[in-house]
Image (tube, helix red, strand yellow):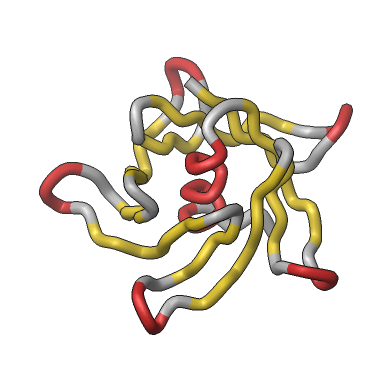
Length: 111
């Protein structure tokens, strides 16, 4: 089980959770499954009806997949960033599975 936060430090707010490859919006009893992630791929929806929306690899988050993918963020050391390199902005934090942090950024807009 992992937790995803919007914002960081004392001002952060829990906005999602991860568990067993499923990404949830919200937390606790009120959470709703919004997607899945596994083996470097992120899916919107779950089960047979899921659709691939992005990929994650070595701390980088990509929208799209294969040759057509575009880098939209990074995750490292408990922080989720929108953008990459010098132009990145911290938008949240995670506790637990970093792949879940990548999945959440793809499935939930932090702005």
